[in-house]
Length: 197
Image 1 (tube, one colour):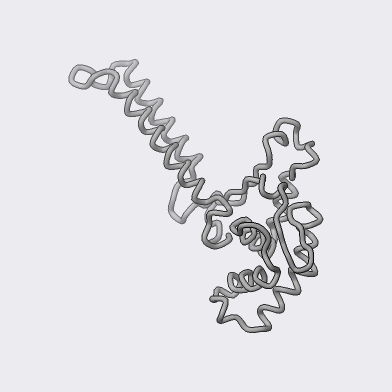
Image 2 (tube, rainbow, N blue to C red):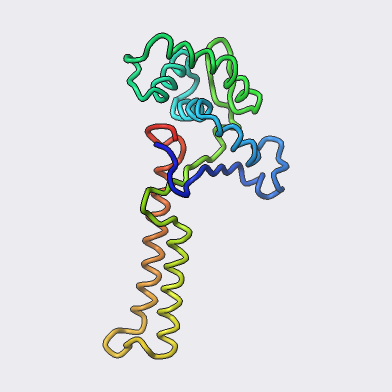
């Protein structure tokens, strides 16, 4: 699954980074997050490790990354496909991720550090022909404003419909939208995706 439309990657480090302008030495900056996630093999590595319970073997990691790359099942991979990814991870991507302090790589074992586990990464995925959430809430706010103006100037009927029915509908619309948005965001958290983006 890849981000589509206007969607993109957003990273949010710990709250302390936001409070002190990104000066927390233990928090990844936005630029560091984008740099780490700009390469698909690093994304796949982090995704696999975030879904694992503890350390993983480099050989298992390389097989899964190769399978995602080739869009194959692991048993269908060729030895060349496995070796290419294994070498690339070992020589380039794992050292880069280790340098950033998000994982440890030692004797064929890969494990995320606390720095990565505290990092909240989610994908803002906008399916084709759908409206981005920001635009949706802007439209809902505009519609709510029109309803309130219409109530003030006595355009909407209030005799047959109770006056509180209008604000109740507005609040319900925002509440249901926010609940759906929250569930959607949780589903698109990096480690909750079936396949890495």
